[in-house]
Image (cartoon, rainbow, N blue to C red; front, side, top):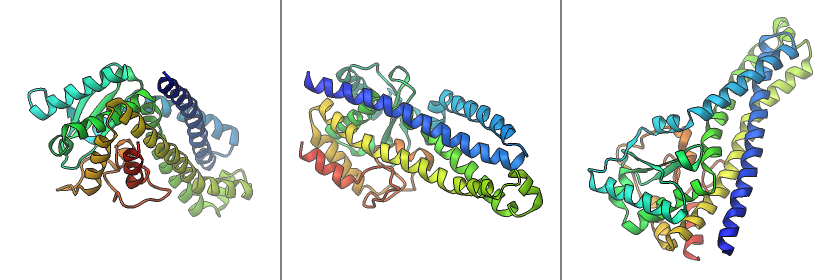
Length: 303
């Protein structure tokens, strides 16, 4: 009972964090588009009217097509029940869903030699769990259960919505901010672009600073939340399987796994994976999408 209450507290906190993060990302996105609109138009009011609808439409489109976008970016396909390893994956996802008290997610497979997995979706009812073919071939059953338990915990803790949608928004902020920065930098000194910034050099300077800092702040905010949620999903996944060593051993295998022929998919969705497939697991910095894998293993083995 106490454990269930703690999980519910985490879910409520994650919902509050989701609202805060989405609000922050929306404001940053509106700000970047506003300054870009200010460069295009002479009037801050017109720039504001330009920014708000674009931001709202983009977020709504990103929300609506988030799951399809992630599956397309990862080149994932539905699991085939006629293939023994994939049939086992389907069975284990169903088993973990029952243990978590959740609807059974759709099961997908990504063709990659690298051991990895991710979860995505807007809510538990339309969630997806995807594992790589490398994970199906290389992991023992208890290790695969640990990985699935971790991803099921992301679904149970309501991590999947903020993770999936924020990836698209952070990417858009970075792209528009870069366009804004070079537009202001290259044209900021001309009389035409002085008019574009309302004839106000201070506003022009604020626009340049915002173009530089907004994508950095957006990414750091998201990554800090992402790393914290990985620790929570590790702990809750171990609770679901009643075997923390299963996930710890799987992470150990991921750390030592060297994929053949490169990693398939897009770097944009790297934060969704159980471990970043595009970066050495021995490296750690504020730019890491995941906490240090050795620390994750240590915490699991101490449970």
